[in-house]
Length: 247
Image (cartoon, rainbow, N blue to C red):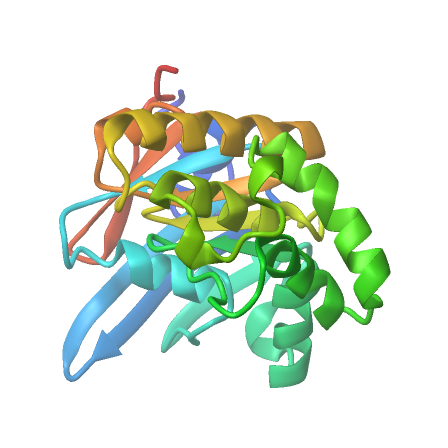
C-alpha cells in the first residue's frame, strides 16, 4: 500500500477502500458522537462493500456499538457523514430511515430479542409483515430461512421453549428474511458458549455471503472476528483498519 493517499479521503478511509476492493456500499467519514460531554466517536471512518464481513473490535466503551448505531441510522452523528448506496443518511427523513432499516438492513443482537409471544416462524416472518406482506406469505417465505439456519425443528415453538443457541439462529434467520443488503450484528455470540457461538457465526457468514449481504460485526472476541474478511479496531472513538483476518 502506497504511503501517499490516492484520493482526498482521510488515510483511514482510503485504506479501508483498498482492502475491501469493490466500491463500498456503506461508508462513514469523520464521525463524531458525544454523550454527556464525553466523545463516544471522535473522527471515526468506516467502509464496507457488498458481500463483505467486517469485524469491529475494541475494548468496552471504545465506541464500537455507537459506530454500529450511527451506521444503521439508529442514532444521528453529531458531525461527519454516513452514506449508504449513495444516500446521505442525515438527509433522509425519520420515516425514510425507518423504511431503510425495515427493507434493506437486518439486525442481530446479543440476546436475540425475539418476541416471546410469537412462535419462531412468526418471529422470522415479522420483518416481512412490517413490509406489508400478508401473514401466510410471510411465514411461507420465513420457513426456508429456518431450514437454512438449521432450526426448522423449532418452527412452531416459542422463544421460551428453545435453547439460547437455537434462539440466536432464529434471530439470524429473522435478520436475513428480508434479504437485506447490510446485516448489523452486535455481539451476536456474546450470550452463547463457544460451540454454539461458532456454529452461529458459520451459518451467519455463509448465509450472508450466499445472499451478497454485507455484515458489520461488532465483537470483542478474536475467535468471532476470525470469521470476518478483515477487522477494524475502535479505540478512544477512532478507527484503525487491520490486515484481513484469517478464517
